[in-house]
Amino acid sequence: MKKLSVIVTCTDRKMFVPPPALRVSSLPTGTVSSRLGTWTDRIHAETHRTPLSGLYKGEHWLQAHAVVDAAARAGFTAELWVVSAGLGLQPVTASFPTYAATFNAGHEDSVAPTGVDRRLWWRELQERMGTSTLAELGSRGPMLLVLSEVYGSVLTTELRELGQAGTDALLVGGTEDISGVQRVPANGSLRKALGGTLTGLNARMAVSWLAHCEDGVLTSPATTESWTRWVERSAHRETYNRTPMTDAEVKDFIRASAAEQPGVSRTRLHRLLRESGRACEQKRFANLYSETMGER
Image (cartoon, rainbow, N blue to C red; front, side, top):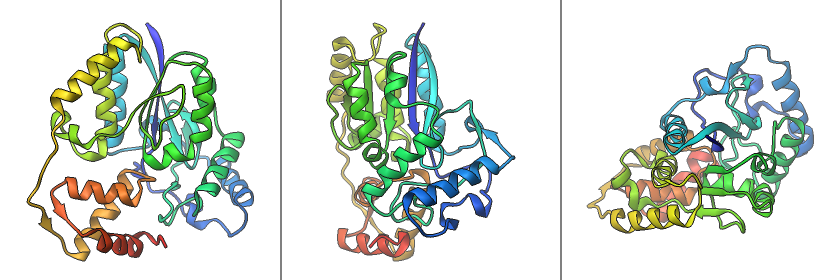
């Protein structure tokens, strides 16, 4: 069977509580490079390690494994990789200590407050710790990437390099179209057809795409056409008599959703809340988000 590299974002939910030293919030102030140097030294010094396949938990991670199973049914031998703000790009067979790091700008364990610094952190993290790059994986065979908005933004440079490599590559989610990489944007109107919550939507979309791949070519015209026809039949624009929420309920939603989806944007969180049938006016949500996550 043809090899397929499956790349997914990590999740804030982990099986073990990180020690204080392996929380980004514990790093001293300084430049991105100096803070990253301290971080990688701490990661390397920690002796208690777990295979990444057993480190993460939650719906997103369960659905990541469902993508691997769907790839096998489509005739691929899938290898699962994780994009991590604390570890770089790693195969899930690799072992690392539990940690707390995210690209979410408002999170207490955010690696950097700005997009420029987050991309700098990622580039230097990859140089110090990354096992591979997207382009290197692409040279080995087709690739399926399931990325959140913020992670897609941070990886823009690597995605563009992948696009230039001429690899058969599909991006589900992300934040923008990349030349040479076929993209399927997140589509909330498919939630009813796919089931589950919006947290696992991108991964469920990837599973569905693979179900339409019957010719062994990930982004073939036949697969694309089959998927497009299914979307046209299945998309359901949900309308709600939305339930009002208290400030405390909105804050609880923000904390829980941000933990499930590291790096998710405020706009995306508000959309998730509304699509779940609950109500919070946009300006009020922005203020509560700032109070909860510290984004200014």
